[in-house]
Image (tube, rainbow, N blue to C red):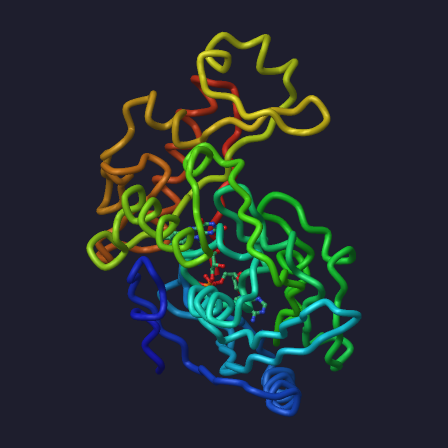
Length: 323
Ligand SMILES: Cc1cc2nc3c(=O)[nH]c(=O)nc-3n(C[C@H](O)[C@H](O)[C@H](O)COP(=O)(O)OP(=O)(O)OC[C@H]3O[C@@H](n4cnc5c(N)ncnc54)[C@H](O)[C@@H]3O)c2cc1C
């Protein structure tokens, strides 16, 4: 048995009867062959910062060890291919050291590069889909490695084809980056800031994040537990409880609401049931002390969804994934 308690950010006690690391296409071919001949499924994990682990995995659990960085130039544009196992925040520092720009707003997000396209990570006005050229995957149905171009990944807010198509194992991500530092400062937290270089901006973003999100080493958490609801302007205007909330204009007459503000206004910040609760620092961050299980998280998730549905008439959508 492989203990995966330290491999998930909620510190849930978890074990897998089979766990393997993979680096190459050959490794993946052998692993899927082994799984098929034993009638088992394969579950790929990154660093468990957006996943809720079961007590026991019935699937064979696998994890990438591809830590490669490959720089190239195409038609004057600098391209970077990064292995799935690279820690996301290490990529931020690597790019900064090589004067490659565009990822600054995404500094400080935990997790691996391989998982970044899965939920199209985003923060402070930028999503990874803005910078992805292609995603390199092993297709376990076709048993081939293929590069899926950005426009075929169906990226949207915290969405991509990789969520439903679990036959696609991300092996590397191809990025198109800029040679000039052109900071994106649209987000309210950084709107009026002046940054003379990317280092300064990255440091500030990490500082802002740390001030808002509880430290997972003290309060195990998965960052935002719910997506911010996006609904039509018309729907919002009809509902007084929604008009009282902050609204962020979106294309096509839509508005984004803050799920955190909704929970906060229902006085749920700091609530706790069965060792699962909402952070006192940020109402959107679900925390656990590790002495709990996936079913308790689901229990609290359902209560929160029901309370928001009753009060605001809005259905919250969970961001992390139950494995
Ligand atoms: C404190 C904190 C703050 C956060 N802030 C943000 C934020 O600002 N913005 C944001 O978008 N997210 C945020 N997150 C969520 C999380 O950091 C991201 O979702 C991250 O990309 C998850 O990476 P991981 O390696 O931990 O993935 P895991 O949790 O291990 O996996 C996530 C999903 O990706 C799949 N997956 C993992 N690796 C692969 C692969 N190689 N191929 C195919 N599928 C794979 C898994 O099967 C699973 O479905 C935050 C989380 C925490 C704990």
